[in-house]
Length: 100
Image (cartoon, rainbow, N blue to C red; front, side):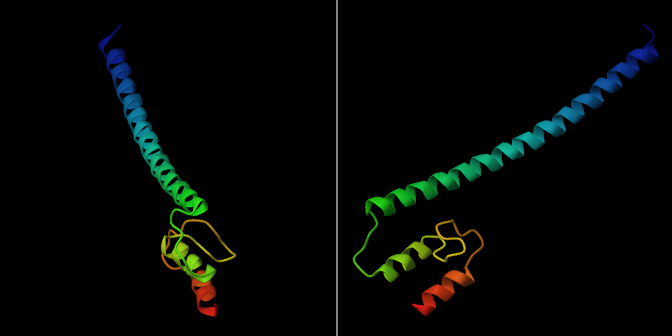
């Protein structure tokens, strides 16, 4: 085996290792994103469990309960009811609360 072909093989191997490193970084980022999403879903599930069992129920009207749910970060509008609010205030929810 001559020196030139050996050098070419090492260069090719180095390039493949670099590509694998980039791919590994991408997979690591996807895993991080999935872990964060899973954490948010677990928190949402626990909040709904508490609401369903009445652990966070306070005396008051249905509107009070909807307002509390909204303040806890969930949609109360008919467009996205029950989903987590991730982008701040929802105009549909706010409109519903102001009408009531």
